[in-house]
Length: 64
Image 1: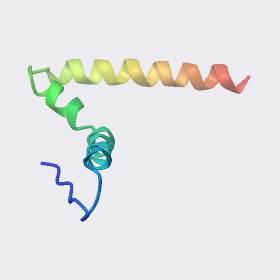
Image 2: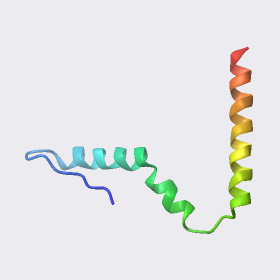
Image 3: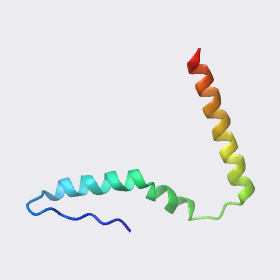
C-alpha cells in the first residue's frame, strides 16, 4: 500500500501527481497485472530470455 502524506496547504492536484509518480516508480500496476493470472516458471524464463536477446541486439545495433 502506498502512503502519500499531505503537506499542510498543499494542492490536491500536486498530491495526486506525487501518488501517480510513486505508483509508476514502484511498478505496482505491473505486479497487480502479473498476479491476475498464473504464469509457469518456464514461461517466465522464456519471456525473460526473449527480453534479454532483444536488449542485447538493440545495444549491439546502437554501438555501431
